[in-house]
Length: 184
Image 1 (cartoon, rainbow, N blue to C red):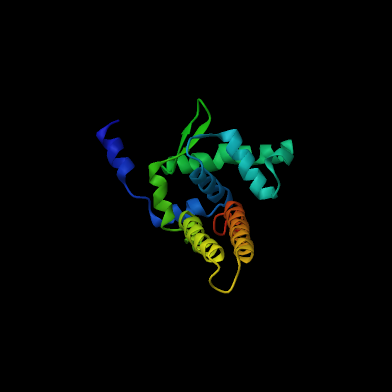
Image 2 (tube, one colour):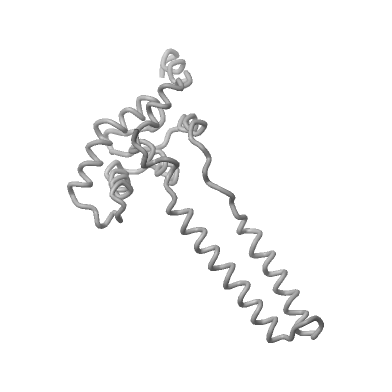
């Protein structure tokens, strides 16, 4: 790479360009989905995911026309625009799309709407400690309840916590990036 090319690549993106890049719901979908992937992704697979979001249907149920619409739009317009800005890397030979390191630049322009994060890695050990204390209290028969009541409380605590965790994870996995469906 030449020195001029290095200098050109290191120039920060203008605010106008970032807003232009984020003005399209499809480009926001692409950025959101690529962030969730650790490796590069085939453009066809990316187009399928974008179409599934747009039509609110599983990828398996997409029609050929829906897939084609998303693919052509990504191939002709959105991926080249993101690649020219240095936000994604697109290998025309393999058809692979990868989020570039410069993609972090657009994060400052997106509100963080993730909400509070529950530290599940601490919830379960803490719950285990509480349950052990309940179990011991039930075994030595001190306090307001017997071993049977302690056992029922332990089962309820783990059951409710596991159910809440399941709902939380499902909700997080179904979240779309902020304002991704707005098209102004």
